[in-house]
Length: 183
Image 1 (tube, rainbow, N blue to C red):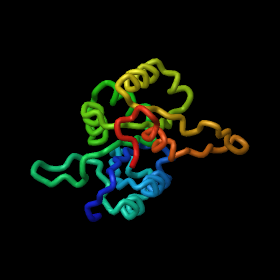
Image 2 (image 1 turned 30 degrees about the horizontal axis):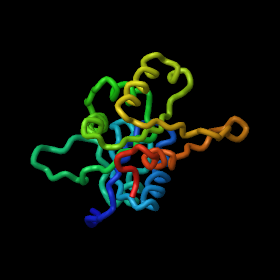
Image 3 (image 1 turned 180 degrees about the horizontal axis):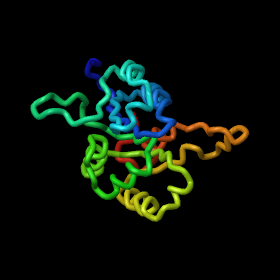
């Protein structure tokens, strides 16, 4: 476990998408910007990234399940939350107020507490056009959640996988109008 710090604490919520294997990029960028970081993973996402490497980078265990009553909180309260990558399923359940996983419960609570939240979706074009998804993004946006395009300005080499711009999640938190932003 990490020693207590004066740095603000960022929750990184990771969903089950292929790009999750590179979530360490976001953690490194956040630490360079003086954030302490804890990762909350959806149950399905745990197999998408190197858990030991992420725990080593944060100095904290990955959380993916509710803690038993009476156990101490493993993370301090968040100053902000970054959801990256965010999937179709998570965005829709979150907008509906469903809290059937620790990740969704955390996201719903963060909105209720006014904690700044940024989201980098990883949703294919067909699902992004689905009416439920569009309504969910609109609803979360009305709640103050900031969505960013992690692929903006990147066409991808020869039709290959485009770079997921992880730092965009941090940039969204730092934009004017945010209660906290970054340190």
